[in-house]
Amino acid sequence: MQPTLVILAAGMASRYGSMKQVAGFGPHGETIMDYSIYDAIRAGFGKIVFVIREEFADNFKNIFENKLKGKIAVDYAFQDIRSFVGDYEIHPDRKKPWGTAHAVLCCKGKVNEPFAVINADDFYGLDAFKKAKDFLINQCNDKTYCIVGYELKKTLSENGSVSRGVTNVDTNNNLIEINERTKIYQLEDGKIVYEDESSLHELSSESLVSMNYICFAPNVIDLCEKLFNEFLKRNSKDPKSEFFIPFVTNYFIQAGLGNVKVVPTSAQWFGVTYKEDAPSVKSSIDALINAGEYPAKLW
Image 1 (cartoon, rainbow, N blue to C red):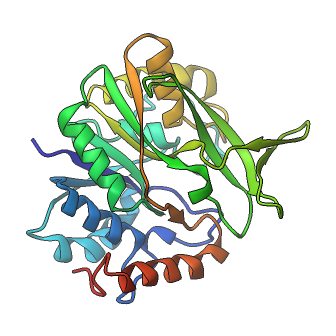
Image 2 (spheres, rainbow, N blue to C red):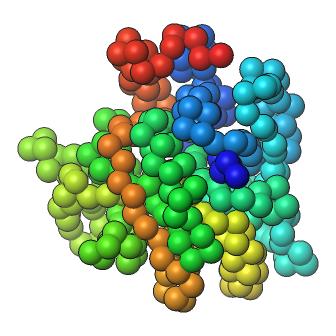
């Protein structure tokens, strides 16, 4: 069975200031998602599931369905503030859905095979899709998931600090924990640091970080449902609380349910964290086209 690619695209793009998931960066208006889908098809994925807000559905269908027809199966899962919330009371100030693990939960009934999860607005590179597909076909099971790990130095922005999940692994490349580091940036001397309340702390440029490219067996969706219910007991009235994938993967490990491998990729990540990143994303894509990695017109 071919694996599925789940693309998380329900975010409101608050920092970018527009619906960046459907912004064009390629020479013929290709989105970052177009390149991810193109790489997924090349790597051997069999289906795409877009996780979106229902009001974006017509927009997405107009953009993607005609050009993907006959190339790969397409489906949609809708993420809404009320999805899987039941009778819990929600704070009236809450505007966003509940985060990335909630988005995975919204795939319940849509995804029943091994699958990978990516962000809509991140460029991951062909090598990452090949590594993910190989893992999903050959290693993934109810007790073995994986994170595709990127070298920290290949994930920074020139336009501001970034937040990254820095992995800590054992000798078998099994994840021990993910440490969320905020305000990571490069100093003038080339050192990479993260900033916290106390001081600056140096990070190795080779540190493997999670960019939300994660491979799961379908049983994780039921785990997300269980943990989301527990999360709501504590946080349903908090207008800003979010239910993130690293919380689920850490629980999976710490509860002894299985292992999460960290599979390194040589790919260069880039994305639009800030609006000012857009020109460099366009130039990076142009460079890959000029190098023959992608055709000038994808579809």
